[in-house]
Image (cartoon, rainbow, N blue to C red; front, side):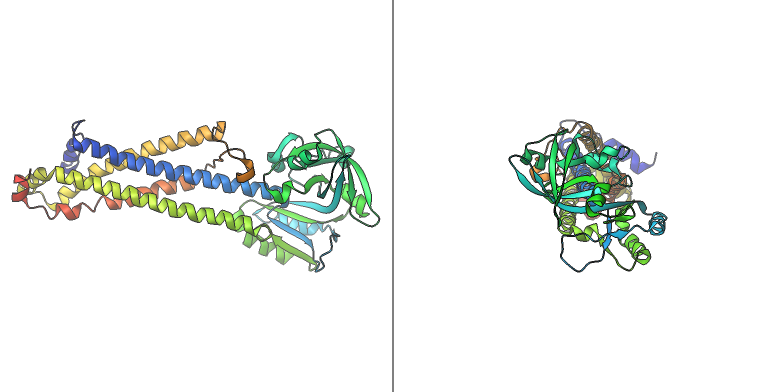
Length: 405
């Protein structure tokens, strides 16, 4: 064992009731609290962003293509389904799927209520499993049966307004000339917490809207493109734009719901500022603790210098001692943070108000790259702070320090 590590190991075990012992515990505690807050902050932040984005993507995909139209008419202009274009899109490495859809304005009438709605028609190309995370009752449309044209999925907010439930029927009037109506059965109820969807959107069969609009089977309202990696949406949009028909317009989900995505970015920036302050406080506490330890060991430092030890040698002694405190704090903080995240992820012990937070409990996302990055960043910052006491050690005079009390 090297001389510096030997001395560091001896001074790292002070008496339990000594001042050094209290300071060491405070240093370990500050690091543990810092890493705990950093890990759970990012876990909750990414969980929150992920849940909100998944809710949006389940209704619109990441990229939408519709017939280019400069009018503000509610009437949807159909596109002719281009199978070659669909195949070209799916060949891109970042495209997870391409689905057909259509939108139709309508009115839902019951004996007591009449509310406006927008029916979104989808077919078997739609990722029903992705939408199922929003369901709170019943099921999604069953495209394997002919009855799917008579089925709808509505939001809980709409169900409450209409005082209806699953397996009940609604009379839906479609806005067109002449007006048409259908009696549709509720097979599922969803909830996202996002008013943009819960207030008006209900899911139906694309073939139903084709019949209402008198469209042939090769017509649809547009394409929805799902991506594997949201961060590459600009690159993928350029690829889709280069291959789509000239009379089709492209809209990214980040532009369509720009206020929501700007809000999520603002949350991200706030967390980064908050975590920078936590790192600064943890580093300050560690440096303060080492300074106190150095002052308590002034006699020892003077004796070592008198015996020929250099400032670098003595600094390494306190560096190893501080490094042990940092690693101990990191292990304790990570352990508590992972335990908290695991309990919240599986048991949802901390609830939220869906009216304000769009979900019923605090979400957790297991972003291991971020988890490692946070630990590495904190370790490097604290590791750099461990060299600051060298300034004090280099100023200690051997003769005066041996007499120091």
